[in-house]
Length: 257
Image (cartoon, rainbow, N blue to C red):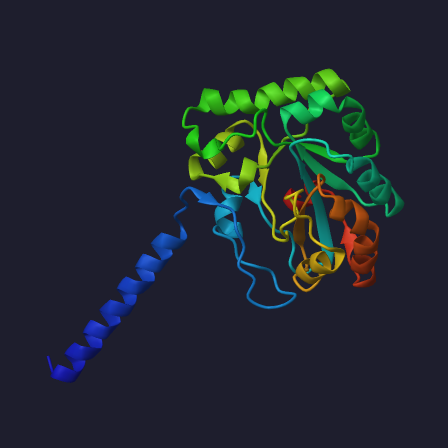
């Protein structure tokens, strides 16, 4: 074999090896804290797992990126006097939302939970105690965190909880996703959020708009915290701005349609 042909063969083998490693790595998921990488304004971000990887576990973080639709979701570990105003605004805009709640929230705020249901919103499972679920390796322990919340929700509303799950703090593992799927749950991450959860350092409206609006993208799953006074204050104008940008608001069930 001539030297030139040998060099070309070695080069081809190296390329094949790199591609194989890349494909293998792209199919691997490990324990991670859900985070986002925004590369350009108005474009969908990249998460630590791809849509295709998540789909295997009935999980999603973004919807159809060719459609001007937004999915509004709110996380709540406790009530901070803001949810009523948020619900008023959602009703004004005829905007469905998903509220991911923990046990103490449902137990302490039954009227608000019943109002969410009555006004057509989804109440999702954020676990009973808001533990780091990635540290739970036994299916029965994982199941208990979800089913105890289901029972509490049924006691308060008289209805069965819809099977949507959001990992506390966005910390997940591949085994957790499989456990949730085995229980019939669909796991919902997000593709648009900002630092809104620190009640001792609430952002200004201007800061919130500067973080949310330029990063708004088609099919975005929006995560806001209903404990945020800023969110309650700006939500009406924020939804109006999104409507002016041509977006509609859809229930999270459409994510998995």
